[in-house]
Image 1 (cartoon, rainbow, N blue to C red):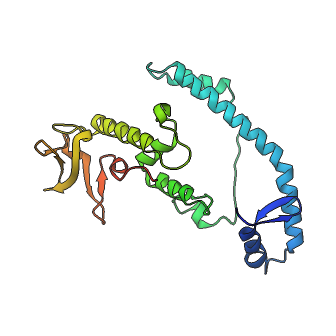
Image 2 (tube, rainbow, N blue to C red; image 1 turned 135 degrees about the vertical axis):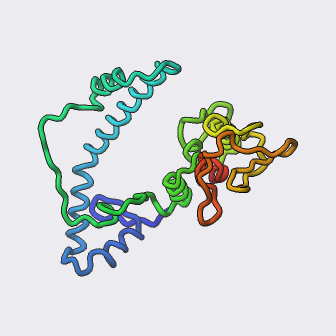
Image 3 (cartoon, rainbow, N blue to C red; image 1 turned 180 degrees about the vertical axis):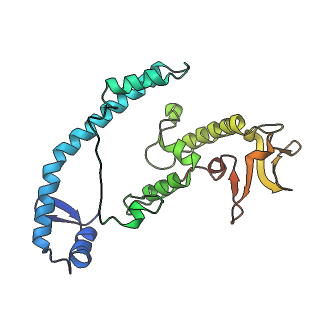
Length: 241
């Protein structure tokens, strides 16, 4: 269990409490007691509003999910979708012209493009999955969302589930067959990928090697030799344990 400090009406992780008091507040002119008193007030004032907003988000998401399920297999109707989102309050009409300006924002937030990685560093799995999401790992994205059914023992919770992992790999191989078909064979049968003479060479266990049906789908190699293009994230590795 994380060591915690009870301060005002808050339960604060010891490492955060010490960091704020020893490294953040000194030199700011803000006293420790004043900081924690004000933080306690803010947290308890906004917590009910935050819970209400989260509940509204869940309700909107449930309505959107149901709308898509009811139209599974049908052509997508953008006009009908926009009308539906407006009806449930997800989209609203602008009331008037407005302008929003901000000041004193760090370049890393305002100007420099990059992942805003905000996860608890005390949980290695959270941090790893968040980093993988920014890198575009199709395996990890599929493993952690409801795109893959949890039936047949393929549940998401707890430690790595090999049943779910196998479902993820099978789905991805079918997906690759759709978006980057091979001249012969299936990605599900592939033993290895390599670049030869500027083309993606695909080898199998018991049949002749082949190439992509459309060779232009291979863009090239990264500096580390990693494949670029061809749904590269799907070829990286199985989901993180």
